Amino acid sequence: MKERRSCSKVKPWIYFMLELSIFMIIGMDIIAYFGSKTGIPTAFLFVLFALHKTKSIQRLERVLERAGEVRKVKVRERYRNHI
Image (cartoon, rainbow, N blue to C red; front, side):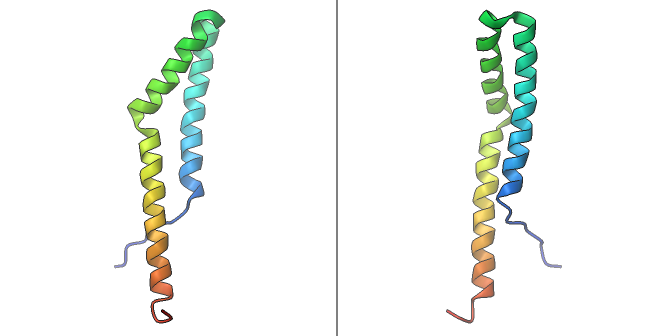
């Protein structure tokens, strides 16, 4: 059975933005709870910590890298006889 691999570059960005929006909403709740003077830096640090802890950026880079490799393999398979 042939492995089915996707090479979408849009879908990983959508998932990253959804994850980021969740962190931003939690950050806005932190700002509402603590007030603007201490809440903004606290929310900013929370969002940075959440992105670092969940390794969202590293996952996005890895998926986009894999998508590029899959795209190259698909192009090679398609035009293998023409080269």
